[in-house]
Length: 184
Image (cartoon, rainbow, N blue to C red; front, side, top):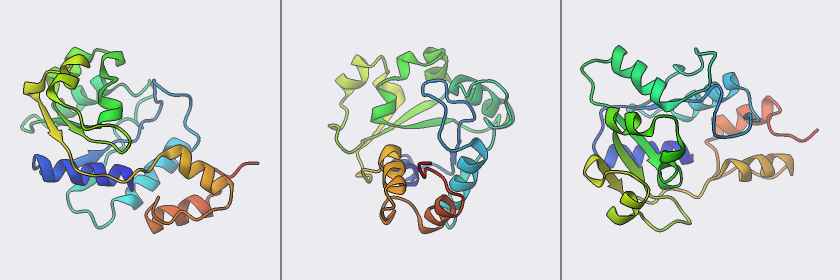
């Protein structure tokens, strides 16, 4: 529900014609994902059902290399030469962008849409500058989004708790029916 809420917020703030959710095959900034790439792709597709302006791309799952945003943006620019690209990030992720591969190229290829995140103050222009982000090429989107975190979902599943309010019902059913996040 968190990713979809961020996508909806971006659509409301910019407005965007379409938002692509792009599951990472091999996330370079984190340890290996608990759920496999194909499961995360399937859950993403279930999460966006009924969302006419949000779709899912498997662009990163088709690569055998780590999922670097710069590569994804480059590929999207080549495949969609008439599109203006925006990169939608929660403030929690955006403030770390300087640690990414080729952050200047990322910021040159796409206008950044930074969505506020629960537990963090809404970013200001000064905050963007301190994070190495050009405020003139950034849309600040201070729209409330739910405080959903992947760790809480995994912990709740492992403890046998309810997923209400954390995942769309179809995604919760997928998680449970595929035994994802259950501790052995």
